[in-house]
Length: 331
Image (cartoon, rainbow, N blue to C red; front, side, top):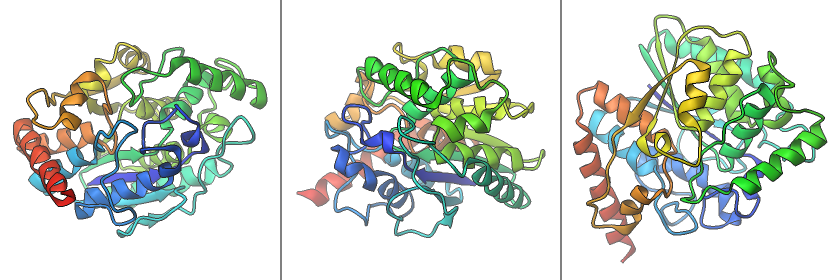
């Protein structure tokens, strides 16, 4: 089963920090629209395909293409979006993550973890594989804060081709000062890190992993955001193997330290060999220039489809077809 957790954090509205949404005002619509694209093929909450500020399409197209080709089951879990998606979803009753420069980020972190555990255990009774994905604008910055608080010094990736590292570092310094935490000061307290400076997706995803029965394969689908979830699990005492599936765009991102952090956490990595260099659409071809990179579990969806016998080239062709259809409808 492919589980998409849609959530939000106030960090996503900081100008220049998140590339999810055409502008900061559109951020509230991005995650629910991604859920709608994945399940229904087009957004309902807005009248256009979610794009970044440069007009590049959501990676939900990749996950949608894999879903259509492989036919795996999909479940949406709402964990703190301002607006609900129009497709069926499991409700966690989470609030959007607060700006940790002004208050606790996720006051209900511990209860959300328990809800995730219950859901993970129940789903794993009937599913032999859970692929856990996310759509949460601003999530790489909340991931950075959690990783730093737990003692990991690498940089997270970004959906921008030029990672806004100075801005992210500034946010971390302000969070550190306000929360009274420092590098590594919350080691051994993963959920405390989420509560202080993380986001609700991290709590729900971590709970899902911990709750899944041992015979069920669990895959965290995403980039450095899922490394933050992995770190929280490790610092909650979780010692079973962890597997993160992402795209090669994240793994090859020279501005971040995905491989180094994954190695430090003892996480196995799959890198989806996507290639849009021959795409006739600049919006897709620009993925090769560092735009977007990952999201909506794109790498994990490709891994899942491959596991079910679908070649990557077939998924790439389906992405082209889906984008062409959107483009045609807009004419």
